[in-house]
Length: 152
Image (cartoon, rainbow, N blue to C red):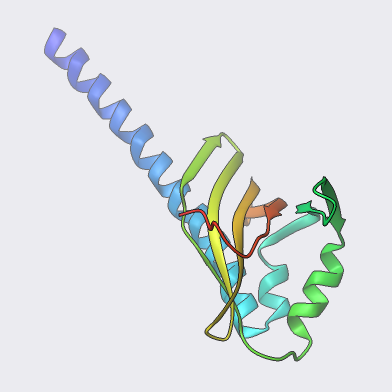
């Protein structure tokens, strides 16, 4: 009887680990799709990764040494991606940490941004995602930006 209980416990724990991994893969896929859309200049593909009401912010270092929180308009960003512009916007991320609690996920992702193959800036992207009937959607993005001391 103890062996059956132990076997059931192992099966249940493995199913939870598998489900967690599947969600992590789906979350990475959503974030990567967003960056693919940026590289392609595809505003329709980009919009498909966002939930309605998405919020964009950046933590900016000011010239006077202060730090400010800047709020950006998501529709302006989507429009900028879809408007022909010089060079390919290529943001390369490393997924450092993904936390999931039911339908909410948080992603910490250091990045380097290139215009074509020329380095522009780096920092950390923090994404909040929500699991919907259509899959994981990005609900919030906040980032840092700098030219040196890039996080790995």
